[in-house]
Image 1 (cartoon, one colour):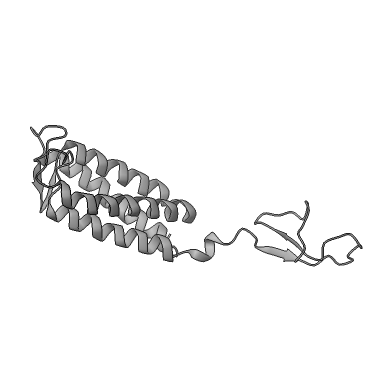
Image 2: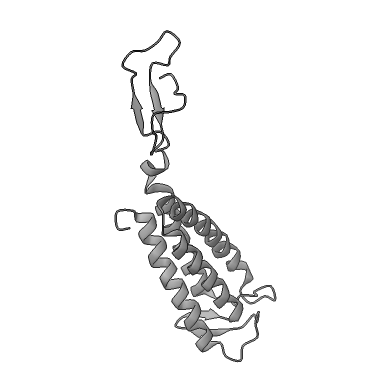
Length: 165
């Protein structure tokens, strides 16, 4: 896992978001499910709906940390959502549409999380994403109609048709 920045980031963020979601329920006792005013968890305002969102995001990231491809895709997807929430959240504070009780600190954290998730998701582990073809070989006695090179994905046993290179 430590050899993949995407897997490591997904595991760390997933764990943190799960813990924040659970801790949020400790401070939001008596707060309406989608109340526009929540209670503070450190600097961040939360309500029960916000806590459930944190639990879902944490679970998705933690599950995705099991493979590079899943972690990379999930980091980019959640990073994009956080970018949107960070920007839209700037306009939701102090309105009736603020159903997850966002405040200024939440917006800053969502934008910072978005930059980190998108940055790592789009820049790291790029070589793994392009490894669809990993093994190529030249036939020992090429026939007139045979391709000059045979290439296949990992686990290739030598069967199937190859493409000319």
